[in-house]
Image (cartoon, rainbow, N blue to C red; front, side, top):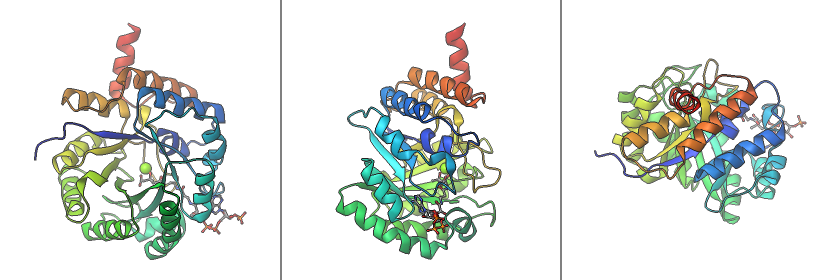
Length: 302
Ligand code: HMG
Ligand code: MG
């Protein structure tokens, strides 16, 4: 299959990128990160979570963050909402898209959201209905689609089964997520092709963590399977506190550099993203893990 001419990038650093940071990041820093990303032209930014602050303390200030940002017309601002309480918080904060997040692995579902896969779908039903009634977009995320830190390789049938249930809930978009970054290109192609048999490829996204350095290859394999929406995080920030050993998301700078080389349009200003990746990494006190980001920043500084 030929590659897409256009790709939608969902920038997840304000949520996935920051949620795993141990030190609380001040609300104004989170606001500035989102504002910089908005100015760089991202069509979709996963901004905050409305989850239990006991489970993920870093995301406790979602309402304040949303109240402080300058919204760019045309950008969709998303939030994770595991239950109705989270949905109500998101609605009050003026979120455009709510994300229900399940898993293709029973063990990870228990660790991350404290219930079985079947219970999670039951819990998502009222959230999905409320989102539709409020006219919001609804996205469903499937964690551990390529492997689970507790159960090992995930059967493709389990991913397809959860995708079918997410579709039945009315999801506008479905994320196939490699939470711990174990997937390789062949398997990613197989999983994506299996999901495209029941979901329109234009509504499927790839969410790849880069733990094993496979993300760019996996994105290419997913594009060959017809996928044209990908999640990424500036500076390669990211990780889930309930996914042992997992590192950050694929770095946005690396994805944009690759897509530019493939002549695939994203509408995003790579130069502004490089600056933002360096800025937020400095704030958090880690060196950016984006190879392209660091190389482009060094070239600028020379
Ligand atoms: P629980 O303990 O089973 O449920 O947690 P609960 O209803 O008993 O609630 C526990 C406490 O949290 C109660 O407070 C609730 O009021 C409160 P207490 O009575 O003890 O004082 N609470 C909330 N507070 C604020 N907002 C809410 C909310 N809900 C309950 N929405 C629950 C169940 C789902 C709440 C919990 O397990 C949770 O919050 N989990 C979130 C975990 C999470 O955010 N993980 C990271 C995101 S997922 C991810 O990173 C993967 C992804 O990137 C894709 C990939 O890479 O795979 C998306
Ligand atoms: Mg993730």
